[in-house]
Length: 211
Image (tube, rainbow, N blue to C red; front, side, top):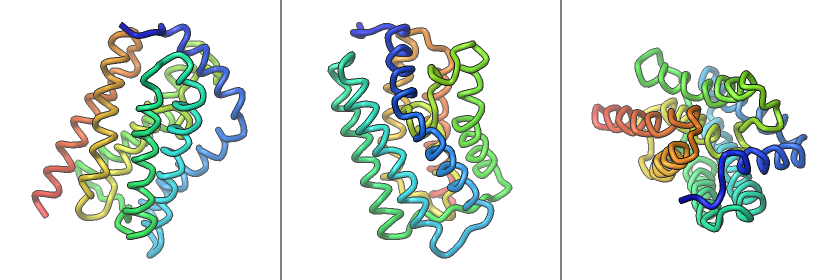
């Protein structure tokens, strides 16, 4: 039994979006920039991609989970810690070691990655806007966990060569956690996340095994 319902959750989300409003533009610009690297990769783009993803996950962990979600959910500090840990993994693997180069390839993994990233960045918030929640009540990439995770799963499928498996563990775990939460709160739009997490894990495993 969750200590909050969907109405309370989206009320807090609306407060959060209004309070951090300029960050919406920064997060969108950063996410679009990361996708651009997949089509015009540079020698340094893997490091920038790692640091960019680290920034998105650190913000969601520290600001959403620890500052806004914690008052209504006692488990939120654990979730915040997971997101901050994922940010550290992206910063180390991509920013320091440069092992997160992105390149779109016209195969199953490439199209799935592009589709998931675009869904999290554009289609997912459009669903909430169509439901009449307004932008204040809409989960957005870099601010809310679900679209950020969807976008990240897509980006991981766009990694050139083998995808570092340790980068997938927390996003996959969160996709299952949030899938259960979505089912409990009857938030239908979020039920795509666990399927996306499992499909991404399968595609990454297949691609890494095939070389």
